[in-house]
Amino acid sequence: MINWIKNIFRVKPMQATAPLILTAKDEVKKLSKAKLAKMTKTELEAYGRKFGDEVDRRETKAKIVSTVAKLK
Image (tube, rainbow, N blue to C red; front, side, top):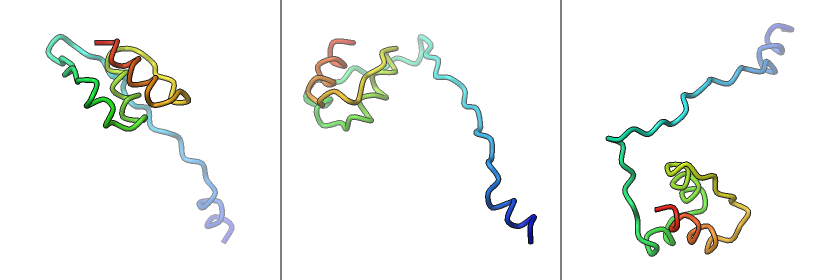
């Protein structure tokens, strides 16, 4: 019984993921500002990371869209 309880509350280590490394063949498709506006904040953050920029999701969506549009 005690082992069963220990297994329930056991903290499992997180698996390490490899960092995203872009090469010349992994060109990022540049999107228009209208298409960027249709994306969610989380999607915009991921898209900005492809260009090597960290986007702050606490900003308004309009500011994030203009920041990511400048990264092209």
